[in-house]
Length: 329
Image 1: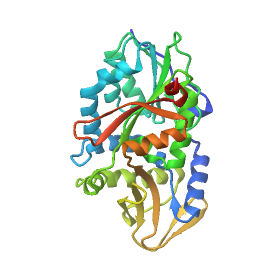
Image 2: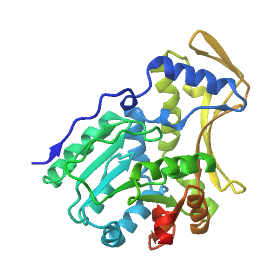
Image 3: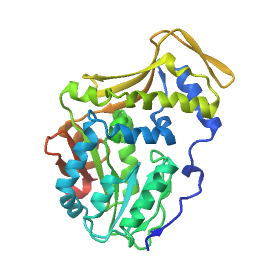
């Protein structure tokens, strides 16, 4: 049977206490422009809605990445080598992970890092059924913070950090570099990073992906406010805000906001927060890169692109990064 080791119990391995969420929200709504962190999307409802987003016809990202994995999973696994410990940031449903694991040669362990416990446990059940010989070491944690990875059952040849989807695009350039540096430290000298990167393309195609006709993305964005109402006792009127996602060509990114529909006040803790009509809360960036753009970003973190793969339509890429010094050798 598969060896499934329990999640850790350190402070890093739990979502922030309610008092911490309240202070984060207070600070974010006190600045100009107002801003809330995108991890607030991912309560149980938000995670389920994101899975629905991935199924929408406008949301090309998942389809393109799955097509890429169908075509190149064997080549990617060959590049990673044998006896790898695979650590995945934000594991979610694990579809692309299963495609990769099927091709990998004698992986030592799989460590999914996921802040939301429900999708993590669901993914573990599926993986345990399909890969009974693989050691599974789930870690309930925020991958953007320093991680204490569980001890593997035996020493791997290398640790590869897997960051699929286009989540790296949710970080502004400076923060993306900081995250890649953190990953560089966690992977060790012989390790690597396998990262999904959404590529620049027609603006209409990009914007449609974040404004699906069924309104699932809008519901996902507004669910952040529903979560705050439930968890910290705020009184956001969801009908008084709307979802807006636009592409900023100068910054090369989708910028997602919650837009106040009227002049209003919202209770946050013991205080009231004022909103002007049309005032926005910035809730997410989704940066898009050319292959050259991302190579330059990785270089700032001391990393080099060893190999990259794209889907048949050249819309999405998966890139394998190693230490710059490893390429120089």
